[in-house]
Length: 360
Image (cartoon, rainbow, N blue to C red; front, side, top):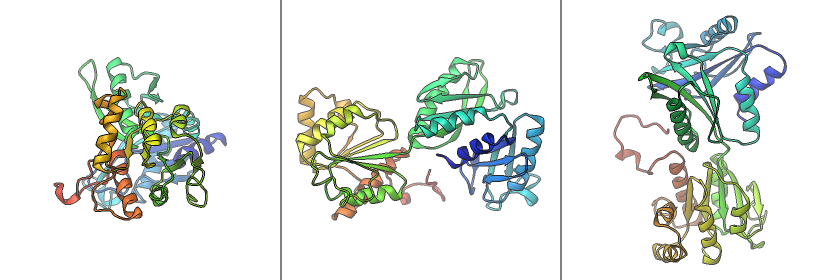
């Protein structure tokens, strides 16, 4: 579970009054990204961080006041503000921090959803001031509550789904039916990214290792027990000896599912592709040469698959890094998976403009 959410629930369960400070926007170079949290108890205990130490003490003082007033507060820190010398960010950037008082009931609900791997977005209004703190949850794509305007709710649901796929929290500006610009912070809690490897071939072994390093949960599915063994895939979270198409039919997929088809056998690969293309998986890649892929696409098209759906298949799989060994091929595949996760094309950084390019 997310550490901040777990801490909120732990202090809540002990009956401690708690305030939550969340980074909701950043500018320039900053130590923490949107979604980072500092948890402050009524007994002045601290957990988490919003700046790596630069402004925590001041945020904690605001949090204690917020707990007394029972009203949320939006505070900005930056090198240019009037308190920059005493509590500004040493890195020279700026951050906006939303500080929320108890009761923190929505976060307790989020904790339960996160525990059960249900994707959820906490949408909180930042501006205009009269709406500060108004909140709605987007649970598994559906609104739980309302921000008071159908158009605003619809935009939150749509943009929340996009950010869930990326696993990125962000503030967005939405114009409501009254013509007002409403700033909303979308705090996302996606299910853990899962890499599903269909085909326990040799490339899948280093691919499993790299995926685990990057924080993915890894499942290896192959009907051939001689391939899907714990000796070969010691780091996999799950080994499944089953026909891949049958597995796809019985297991739910979501936007945090990433599919790699490696068996290189039409009898196994193509039934999987037919089924997985009906799911919301964010990445679907299939190994094979360009000639193999052309022939595969022709067969799937003859079986009734549309060009639109077939266009989702990344094949030949991976980014072009000149990979030859299984380990290099695995790096090329994971690089493309990560690029897909963050909505990037895998463009070399030197070809991008700007002095600083964020990983996000």
